[in-house]
Image (cartoon, rainbow, N blue to C red; front, side, top):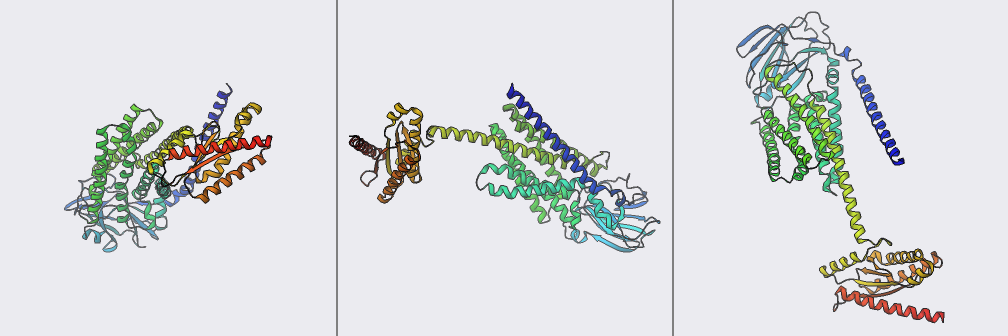
Length: 573
């Protein structure tokens, strides 16, 4: 009953700590969020240029259209778009900038007949990727009531079917607005990237000592890829004045590389199924992912096919991975209902739901102009949760393995260790001798020991005193001979040492240290009367069979034991 109460108290304390930690994280996150967004209402004041546009797509013209509702057939590489409208008349025209969203298009910006900005034309002429995201265009002081004109040429096929809102902000606030609007991706992307880099650096060194850290390396590389993809996809890296095409390229590369460490991470779970078909399917998916990523990045590097044109194929392959992994975890749960598989399956389901949601939003918005979904970009949240579950699963798995390894080592140690003295036992010594015979080692010496007066000590002072005598003998033998080889208790009052030398000076030094240790032990423990008979034999060119050497050492030990008894008898007489 007392143990049950103690257990309940510990459980309650753990739950209270978890609740406290969750509340602290929520309050801390809310405080940091307020720091970013407390003046958002003031800095986010802008003029949205959505109405009164005259638009020409190739040879088709549209007049007085609103960007909110304007939809058109999907545009392809080489299509030319012209957009015109007048600026409002009543504006504070000092220090303003145009926030212009583009999708794989080169653009020139005119005010009346004067060109004030251009982007992407040199890359378009060299058939290089242009990128997607926001362009910040500084406006002159006297742009009010003048005509804004945008000349655009599309750089990729299947680019878009609608225009995003075009807005005018105060120049000093424009990057703060971008960061504040995307503060959640900023936090998540920075956390994933920094966490991944730190963990990766540590794990690379850990892998030199054990391959069991491969999964944590996969998690860290996956985290880096997803962190970089998040920062690029939500235009956070614009604050570093990186070119738009570089941000887009980094976005595609990180997305294309991300599945590789995840697939490698799943290898252990696939092998645990012991299903040849699933093993073959895993190899196909891994090879396909590596080959596909290599080929696509290579084609992009030589400007034959850009990553933007192959994105849908990579997304399809990622969906195949997610479906396959869910099947693997369902099958593992049927075999073994372990917490690791349950956690991983939950993470996979959440991640799949978030990815499917974002893909649905992306394709409906890009190709059909549908924007009714209220929230976008939840894949980042799903990925953070998934990486957290990967970490928890890994540590649960590694803890279980360490416990199993510790238990196995304990059993092995128990099988080869004498319980009383904690030195090797007879079984270990016999196996050690066999190894010497197999390696044909010809440089060893066998020492045999016999503890004197053990029976008398047990009969006179009890077995506790006899056990002290045995442990003391083991200590002095281990001290003198242990550094040079192995020491074992053969049973009862018999011990053995095998030193990996047959040098006479080394043997004399060990025997001298042995006798000194006996004298010191008798001084340390009054009335111990520790006395040990010793015999030894070394291998020779004529005789190096360890069994015969052992027998010779044992015979010499008994000769020494007889001499010690005779000497003790003369002293008593």
